[in-house]
Image (cartoon, chains in turn red, purple):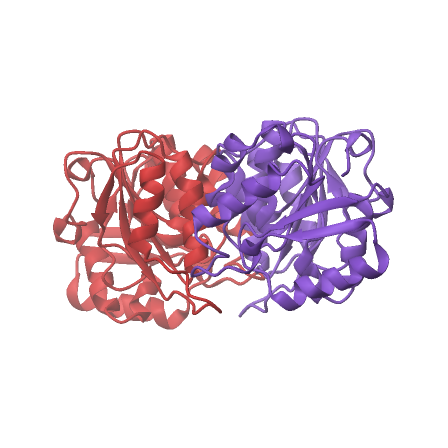
Length: 275
Length: 275
């Protein structure tokens, strides 16, 4: 039995989305136990419980010796508030675990990777079950947790990689949570941001990414309509700022805030240990 | 005659707002010439002309030996795209000029301050004439350009200061445009951002501001309604992140995206040369 411990470091999970993932796992993954921490359903203002509650749940999941992996239930803002304390307090049981999530949970993936703790990977979360293609996203995550590599992002090669939501990466740059990405292929995706904001974020992150192997562009989705058109495409934006920062632009990446979001293990994909 | 050269490094200016500022200046500041560069009214996608057009206009204004000051017409996104090239190309005539703006033009204020060029200050722009209290904002700017110090932010003391839009400061941190703010009182303001985004921005900037004298909080205005309340106030957010980064929180600052926005010269206010 593969036990997957689930907590919500930012936004709370709806019960119906937990149930949908449980149903899918029961049907298709009889060897998987989805262990939802009660904190997933807590409420405290914006968050799934206050900082202390979310931190404690994350540590219980990471330090659970019976669990082979930690799966983040949802993004939403908040994991940056607990990430530094979390990685400083994780014990031996966390060292071999897979950690899977994206969007706001990228703060945790970054901090784990920086700390050399477990196998962080950028990929689907429980709450993705609500999306179009959500069942496939959950299936991709459970496949990966159980050792099936089909859900990996297809461009992954023998260079180390990392993937982030663009805003999350921008907020990580220069902070205590930021890992050294020298020599890495860095993939970014964004959702619900104006193109001028995407351009601004690229200005910021490319100045912090000198020395990476290159940048790949995931999907920039649900761009809000502005009072005036920005005038260039997301790919033009990525190329422009990569060129200014002398970073190789490597093309698209198959990641995004959607059901098709593929899995990007941090570091070398082939070396990534699964639960 | 005090000649003030005006350009738009980001968004274009509406003619009616230029006319309103001209009318006010003609009535109340007969010794002031407002020299609007035609680029203020240019259009190119999101911007008041493409990068080359905006850069050329900024350089013409900064290098105009007959002008005592450069006044930014409007914020809007875009000044970061031309700031590095602009400061690298400014000549002797720019060295003594006052430069006044805020919001997106903070990228230029930062780059000028870093480069030791002129007297950058955070304060009203021409387009503020459209706001409630807009005439007072324009009057405050023209008072300052002509040597009257009444519009200064009242907490300014014998410590150097700097002021920024919070998003602008976050995007500046760690880039080639960022000045050394060690020992400075840093003031920040924000508009039209969710409180979770304000919290996220504070996480980022406080990690980059170690060594400043302290932080002051300007107005956090027009916060959009979210699907769930954030749960704490802007001042709680500022106090929380300042405490975590061991930065003294110094209270409020009288700056913001509004007609009451007071003037914060970069560096020592008393030493700030006006036009």
